[in-house]
Amino acid sequence: MKTAIYPGSFDPITFGHIDIVERAAALFDKVILGVAESQSKNPMFSVEERIALISEIFKDNPKIDVLGYSRKLTVDLARENDAIAIIRGLRAVADFEYEFQLATMNRSLAPDIESIFFTPKDTLIYVSSSLVKEIATFGGDVSRFVSPNVKAALIKKISD
Image (cartoon, rainbow, N blue to C red; front, top):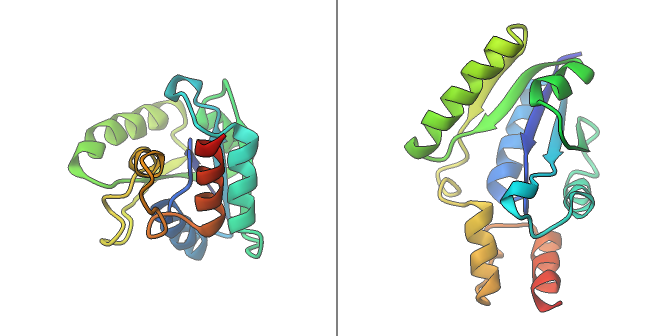
């Protein structure tokens, strides 16, 4: 069985992330979304909330699993789950330099695990979790960028 890890903060998960997950699932037997705690990013949603939102989106796809992780290298998470690849998303040229450094470091730490890059559909290439949160915070409609359950969670979180 060929397994890939798609790590990220997913705070919140967007249609761009979903597009990448679905395309990765077409290539791998199993895709694990590794939801990083990412306290340094000051997340809006807890790890448990993000896992619940993502799990709801992919509940009907047995090829996709979701798990949280903290204080662990992504390559270690990949090894623990017998993953052969780490999936990363690239939206723009600005992402490339960081992702290239990360992939090179991961290869140094785990030469047996490949880094694979996906770009989202052109209609989603500009979507980021940070922008979605900002739009939602100022009362904008995020329906084009996130699933209904995520939109509802954003509205609830902002109104609390």
